[in-house]
Image 1 (tube, rainbow, N blue to C red):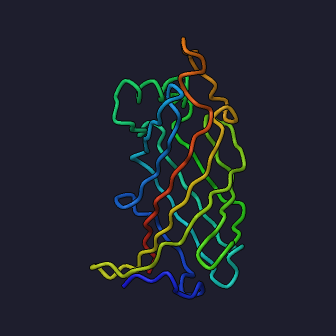
Image 2 (image 1 turned 90 degrees about the vertical axis):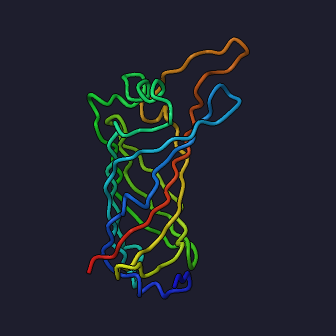
Length: 186
């Protein structure tokens, strides 16, 4: 039974992100006329919810940069290169929360330090609580969806190519997308 009206205190505990049921993705403009969507296939993360004091909740996420997947091998290789994510020097992207603010019964702003290519910036991800359920194995699962928009230039990722028709090949703004399923520790 899924419930989005569960009392927040019932959610208190430690949760490990289930990578088999979680998507960490992104969307960026391409050639100023369309969007390219992609994701990361390898990541680990966890969070601790304090239902009595949501501001004391914490989260962390580590993404393997080399697991980027846009369904195009050539583009993925370019994204791993020195022009973008610099995989050889920076094999991981990290997020560590610095604050949690409950904005409604089911919404939370999670602010933290996001590190990409060795550059750390504060980013706020707006999350919606999607519900809690017991899975067939007796695990308590919790779901959150969220997003944040970042500037890739803020992280030193400035490569681009001018288009004959004006504009550039790759947009600066990148929307980060999080569809999280996590399992509560026993």
